[in-house]
Length: 455
Image (cartoon, rainbow, N blue to C red):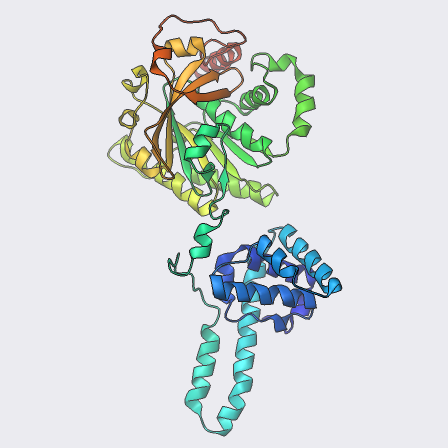
């Protein structure tokens, strides 16, 4: 049962409805034929609804704020113009709390209004004995507002395709990578970084997470190898540029930096081989319910997750885990980054190609973007390496870039690759650089884990 007028729901409810109509195309698609500005008493609300319907009928999508600003300038009544501007601001700033309930309740309200209208119009048809007409009116009212989203309609959705915000991305710390990704990893995308053991893969995830947090995004970082506190110290090193084995002696500086970071970072550890993608999904929902909606998810790393699906070989299980991870990214509409190892042959290559993926080559097929990080023994000493684009759904692949890597703070500089620069096998000692991917704190953590496993 719904209320009989929209006013009875209150102002906040009406604002959330407008917010949904402005930002959720699927919701607007389903109810655009049964919504009317007449449901609202507020003149500013009526204008907004009328513009939304008019724009959808012509362009088959929701109007952007830029479009509404232009239309707003055409209003001669300054009082109305000010009121509309305030209502639009409230709508765009409205939270997503209870949004599913609001959309469902408003849809039912609109359907009931259509049914009421059909019954009133049936009176004259009843007097005329036009029972077929009555049946048609009632059936049309009952069908109104049903799910009409059949997918991207190529001929109608031109405006959606060519909008700058058609694909929402979170950029990486590396401008060269952003350029070939058309801005960064997009919502629903699954990005993967391959590398040899101890080559800095986990540090690259810290770089991706730290950069996103610094831009104001909320990041969930799942670790299946290292402890939560130690991963936190790696982020301390990234933000402060203090080597990870020295951050514990620089607490005051870390405490000065943290309040200046606009985004939220949550680090969660799961036991290796015990957690499944369902475990991760459950935790994401828990975090969201507590008020932090993630913009980016990092899993270090997906291969260490478990699966309830049992197959004849490990490859089948890995494929299931990767497929489920891609499905989670699409369902939650957020990008997911992870890392994976290369096989023994790949660990010896200057440039790691796609055929060196360990476990299953299908990993590359499932993901949207694959990048390899090659760092041989001399690279770990010299602070160098190579990024190679193995797969890219959004642009060119097969490209190789040189990398200057500081695996004590998680900072990677990407530049043009020149093979001649890597021909000298003589290691060059780097100042302020931890040797390899294992600094003294790493070694202590691994030492403690060794004794725990053998106790």
